Structure formats: C-alpha cells, structure tokens
Length: 300
Image 1 (cartoon, rainbow, N blue to C red):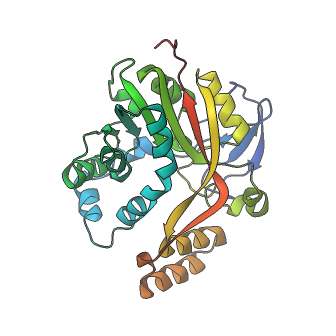
Image 2: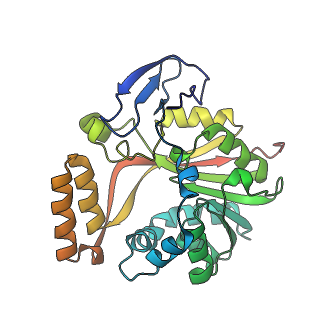
Image 3: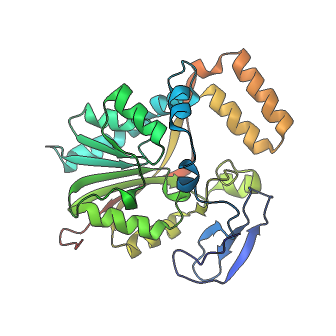
C-alpha cells in the first residue's frame, strides 16, 4: 500500500469516506483541510504504470475487431465535443497546434484534424497509439505527458478528457500542461464530478467512484482550486453528458448494481439484442468540462 498526502493542500489529515473494497479496490478519503477526495492508501499502481505492462500487439488486434467496444465508445462520443470545437475556433480562427493528453485511439484528435488543427496525441498505451497512427493517421507520442519532451510554450491548445482522475500526481501534470502551453493558450479538461445529486443518491454505487483506475474525485470547487494553484485562469465550466451505446448503458447499470450476477445478465442481454448498434445521449450533470487559459504573460 502507498500512502499519499493531499494533492491540493499537502495535508495528511483526512476522514475515511469509503473503506477499502466498499466503493472500489482502494480506500477513499476526504482531506479535512480542503475537502479533496482521493484514494489513500493505494493498493495498486496508477493506470499509466499498469498500461506499460499491456502487450501492444494484443491491444492493437483487439481494437481492429469489428465489435471493439473501445472503438464504438470513442467514435460515438466525438460528437459530444462540438461545443468545444466552436469554443476553440472562436479563440483560434486560424487554428494552430493542438495536443490531446490521453489521446486514446485518436478519434477526438481526428475530429479536430478534419477541422484544420495540427494535432498530436500523447498516449502511454502503445497499442492505442499504434491504432491512432495506422487507422487514422494521427501522430502520437507513446508515453505520458511528463516524458513526452514537448518544448516550452509550443502548443496553442491542450485537451485532457477523463484523464486527470487517473494520474498519480494531478498538480504536477497540470504544471506540465502549463509549461508546454503558449502564453494565452487554452486548456480544456474533463473529469467526473462529485458534488452531484447522483453521487449523493448512489454513494458507493456511483459508476465513476466504482472505477478502480480512478484515484482522484473532484468537485467543482476542488478542481477549480487545483487548476488555479497550477497558474491557470478559469474561463468557464460546463456540466456535460455523453453519448453511449446501449450496451455501455447496460454495463454502467451493472456497475451500479455491485452484483456480478446482474452484470453478467446485462452483458448477455446486450450481446443478444445487439445493443452496441444503438446509441443515445445522456446528461445527469455528473461530468465537468472546464475551460482554462494560461495568462498572456505566463512564464513556462
């Protein structure tokens, strides 16, 4: 087990929110000083470390299968970022260089590439990186941001969607984003939100807190405090939904049930009814997409 201090204020004083094994594999605590919720202690490495053990050839072979859930998920959810595209185009009508941290298979990057942006992905999963390059022609650096060796003040826009909750040291990751952004550059980040009615109602059953890979759990307030500490100015925050295929909806319901039997029943139903062919958009306001700016005079 690895014990960590609060990433926002540095305190080691906390209360236990969910004991180990109740919501997920880790114990989840709330900092007594600033309220940040996080996994402590951690019983496994952060996702980026675990990803390094994945067989790239196996991952790539899984992604090119016709029924790949990951391909379906990413390709369906691209349309959820239309408002982000409009926002960025207002700030950068001539486009520029756009980096996505945790670029995955590259579908979101391809969306911006088709809109005229010069895009590059940073993705530690080598198999996913290879897919982005071979299937979509997206340049991808197969590592974590801190090891990508990007130049100071070299990027106009950074995207980081549903990544910050997985990283071992969010503050350091945010400072690295700050370093590579040009003064006046835009940073758009999305992560689950835990000051919601859904979390109050579901508690340990809430879908995002149940994910073993999630080790930080931000409210609107704690996220804004952390990005401000890293030097960014908050432009706006949207509470967004996402598009899902119906088989993923059934998967989420299974997660909420905390029952392996129910999860199996839902999975079998989804396969039998071909629910991966049907999609819908849901917004229960449990996701926050925050738009940030590096000050025009910001130093590296």
